Amino acid sequence: MEATENTKQKALTDEEQKKLRRKIRRSERAVRSYQGFLLRLAVFVLVLWVLFFQIVGVIICPTADMHPRIDSGDMVLYYRLDKDVRAQDVIVLEKVTAEIPTPQRYVLRVVAVAGDTVDITDTERLVVNGNTMIEPDIFYPTLPYEGYTTFPLTLGAGECFVLADSRNGGADSRYFGVVRTEEILGTVITIVRRNNL
Image 1 (cartoon, rainbow, N blue to C red):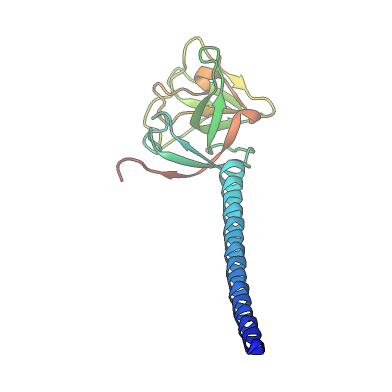
Image 2: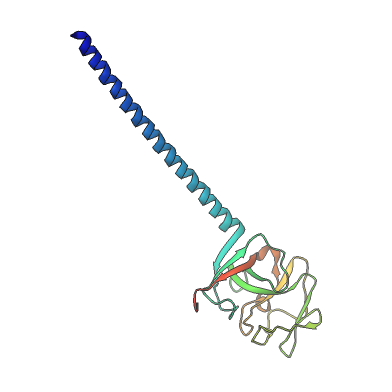
């Protein structure tokens, strides 16, 4: 009789141990699954951080200076690692001026680079290295701004000259002078229209 009771207790104990082992295995699988999820989430956040804070930048265009190609409110993606700009590149830059001491971001077109000489004629034309530029997609005259940049202007190493596509009143190198390489945030790679889709 006593032996039967001991066997019953032992059997119950074995059954309980099996249940306990199953619970432990389930909880270990849940922990591993949770850890795997956290690891994937951390990798995803790291990839996003590298992509959008080290390689690609995003800015909402602050002005309509590049109208009609880029309008105020359009989302602009730019490649941060490309600071070696060429004429006709559209860039994002950050500039501090005497009138506005806090850094301002601009989206503008490069029209001349280091070694080029820029001039704006009395006939409201852009001249680079003695050649009058034919700009079929610019719909406004290129006016010099009185009291700011003096022309003709020869660009030094690490400098470029930028203009807005909307030349009648855009804030650009006619107003704040040349742009240095360290002020360039990157080259525009695509635009996402906010309006007029």
